[in-house]
Image (tube, rainbow over all chains, first blue to last red):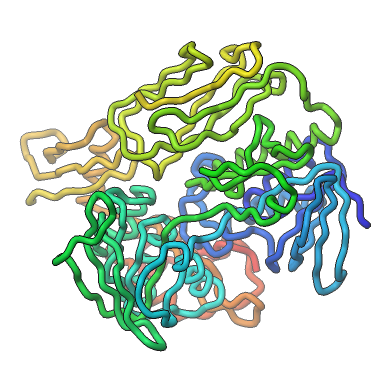
Length: 417
Length: 120
C-alpha cells in the first residue's frame, strides 16, 4: 500500500492542471496515474493549432499545450505512473491499479481527483442501419492512427456528424491526399465551432449538409459506400432525397460521453444530462474527498476551460487535505430553466466562495437576441444580453459571492428569456 | 473585383460578410453583413491575402514515436498549403528533437519555418 495526499486519475489536460495546482497549494505527495504510455492525453494527437488562446494568449498545437504542463509537473517533482490501469476506487479513497512492472497495487489517498476525460460515441450508440464492414472509425480513432501511429485510414471519405474532431479530421485527411466528399449533420445547425467550419471545410470546398444523415451502409469486408438522406423536423429521412456516395472510409463525429465507469464504482451521483458526476462549487463530487474536473464532468469545447476548471479542483483538493473546506452554512442548488440543458456546478456551498463563482451551461438550441436571466429563489440576481447562443458553445456566467443569499436550500435558476 | 462572401471567425456569431470592390470608399471595399467593426478587417484580409498556420506531422526516424507533429511558425498564404504539404511529406526527421526546433527553414520561400511542435 502506497500513501499519497492526492491521487489524480488521468494525465490529460485536466489531470495535469489539477495535479500542478494541488502541489502549488500545499499538497505534498501528489500522484498522476494514466493508462497511456505518455502524459498529455488526447492533446498529443491533436496536432492542429488553436489551443491556449485564453490561458497563454497564444495559438498552440495540442502537443505544445501539453508539453508546457508536463514540464511544470516534472519541475514540481510530481510523481506519475504511466501504462497503468486504475481498476477500482473505493469510497474511502483507496485506488487499486495494475501495470506490468508493479502488478496489482493499492494506493491510499487523502483526496482523489477524477480526470478521466471522455470518449466518443460509436456506431453502436447511434444505430445506423446497414452491413458491418471495416473502414468505419470514430474521428478520434482516425486521428490517432494518422497523427500518432502513422497510418492513413482511407482515400475516399464521408463524415457523419459535425463535431469539432470530425471537421478537424476532414481537413487533416484532405491535406494527406484523401478525398473528403461530404459531412452530414442530422441537426439543423452545426455541432462544432464556426472557425472549424470555415478553416476545415470551407477552405477545402468540403460540403456540410445540415439536417442530413446516413440511412444505409454498403460493403462486405470493407465499406464500399453510404446513402445519405435529408431528414425532417422529427429526424425522419425524407423519401426521394437519398444520395449514394462511393467511399472506403466513414468517420463518425457524433458526440462525446464523459467516461465514468470508475465513478459509478465509487457510487457517486451522476447528472443524467451531462453524464458526469454531480459536483459542488469546489468540484467535489457527492462522495467526500473525491473531486472531478474536465471532460469527465461535462464535455467542454475549449481545453482552456478544462484547465481553469481543473485548477479549481486541484486547489480545493489541497484545501480538503488540510481540512479547510467548510461543510456548513447555506447550500444553493442550481437548476437549469427554460432553454438551458444543464448547469455545472449543481450545488453551491456559499461558505466556500471567496469572491465569485463561474457557472457553466449549454443552451438547447440556437437563440438570437435573448437574455440569460439568473434567479435566486424568486429574485433576479443577474441578466445578461446575448446576441447569439448555440449549443456548440458553452455559456459562462460569473456570480459574485455577495449576490448569493444566506438562506438555506434556495434554488438558483437560469432561463433564456 | 466581384462580390465575395466570407464567414467571419472572430467570434461565435459567424457573420456572413459580403465584400465587393468600391473605389469610392477609404478601404477600397464595400462591406456588408458584419455585426461589428472587427468583421471588416477580417473580411478584407480573407479576400485579399488569406493566410493560415499549417499543421501536420512528419516521418520520424529511430524513435518509438512514428510521427512528429509540426507547424509553420507563422501563417502562410492559403494557396501554398498543398505545395508545403508535399515538401513536408518528402522529408524524414531525426530524433531526438526539441519543441520549437526548425525542421524546414523558410519553406518554399514563404518566410515561414516549419518547427517541431513537441519534444521527442
